[in-house]
Length: 411
Ligand code: G3I
Image (tube, rainbow, N blue to C red; front, top):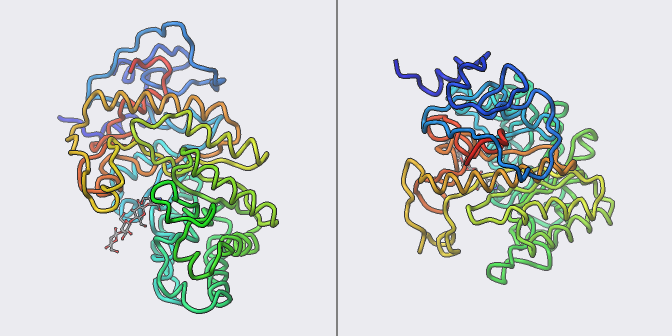
């Protein structure tokens, strides 16, 4: 009988060391759950990777890798929660990605169900059905829920931005109050404003100082809408943690603009609790630049929380034209993923996670999906096979997962 990944996942509910060691487990002798990447039974005090040659851990045969329930979240239990994006469709279908999420993660971000274009596509009409279902599923399984996102220009129905700035403000405050109030006590973390930082670094046209020149900015005439959203969210739920989130904070120029916006919000007394770094990375990303983004927040704003909110490592480094008009996109790398690229991804993520474990301001690290086939990067910026996540299309753990959970795993 051919074991599917789903079968293996069930089989490993209360895994024993034997089963794991049969896959070429690690040399960890800390407990009966030792084996491939088994999380240490005692918390690992993160140190810079040792220079001594680790005992050999033979790489598992491809496609025949199983891990113990809880490996991911347990490995980092003393550092941060491990999260993933999830959709209501997958939860309702109880598909393999939902099963793996239950087995390995302890934080959930609804991938799109909490966005304004899904919650209130028509003015004054709020639909919480899909969002409630995925939020309650996560809570029933003792997982934190990150609310994403109250304000995002790419998911804003046109009616939001009609009328005078005062009318836009009143509408925004009503929306934020209604949504945050609805989820109060269930969603404890909100991406209040998403992708509001200038992207001038590309074309010199999409920024006004540090602020992104979005439809929100144009309708209001400035970036005060960010303040309004945070203030309304705090008023609606004083206990929720409020985040400003953005992508490419690993780029020093964009990071600088984000810091400028946070500095302005805090100078105005706007309540902000943390920064969400999306970290949509590529194989050639310098992980130290990603870690520098965490440090930039911590160094200037002591006490502010850092989350990694949408982590994935694309196998492509396309030019801007591919993102703008699907021209000059790199050719499909194919499926299954090339071994050398899997190894590069594993090396990058091992360095990143070693660094994140040393930074106490990091409280949640979320991947943007469970299995490679779930990823938005299979359609954006163009349709082709991508392999950006920790589990392959069949739900097997990839080298990157083994590399971040087992210091002795040989990439
Ligand atoms: O699954 C439903 C389907 O049942 C329905 O019939 C159909 C028509 O409405 O919609 C389908 O849902 C789509 C969903 O992706 C499927 O996962 C939504 O329309 C579509 O809008 C949604 O796109 C999401 C996108 O944000 C816009 O909300 C992507 O999943 C999601 O990965 C992407 O995530 C963004 C972050 O929020 C912000 N950072 C960038 C990131 C990637 O673009």
